[in-house]
Image 1 (tube, rainbow, N blue to C red):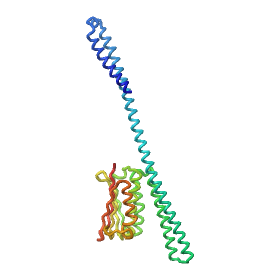
Image 2: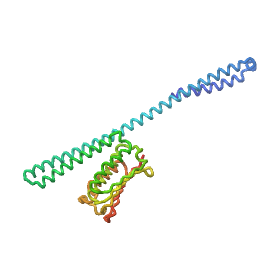
Image 3: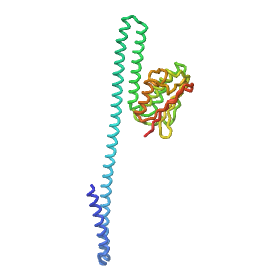
Image 4: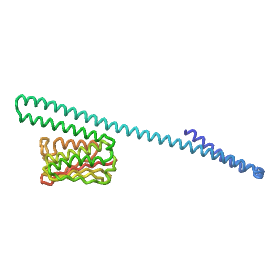
Length: 290
């Protein structure tokens, strides 16, 4: 194709010289109208060459555009496949560990049944039920995240509200979730949407279990090119310097580790503000939109 363009340039140069030659050909040719005929012929040839060059350049740009779109499409498909593979691995690990736990608890329940220890037996059965319920809920979250119908952020508001509001109402806790009108039209990757929702869910669970709060406010909004999630309760709070892995009354257990892990997975910033002075706990996630 580049050779053709070079040839066209050469043809144009030759035509220019040819027209100059015709202009100085002879006065007789001018008087007889010959120059006019030669100039007209040269002009038609020149125009045809220009048209041919235009179509060649147009075809060249169409091919380049097609290659760019093809490469973009392939990259998008590879990114989606990577996300699906990661979700599949997480789902496999979670199901495997949950089923293993249920199996162990079932064996323990049999032992307590043989010992006729009803108190411990009921505790183990409650644990089995809670573990199974958590697994069902987590599978529902993953199915929601990978559903293409939920690509827009409008779906995350309804899911947040349907998860937290009934539980808060049952525990007589005020729940507030204002809607930023710009967020529902935002479209983000399924992995980002999934992790933001699961961080919200983890924060709500910790507030309900350990904070002893009377109100929870959740905000999801856009600011300075970032998607920001905040979960704020008015509970007892905790001293971050005194966190230990065995302190069940703080966020220092699996909940905090899970939130950090999920924030790192989407390259988001996680900030936790809390103190044992009754000012509550504020969890903030800031995701920079690419």
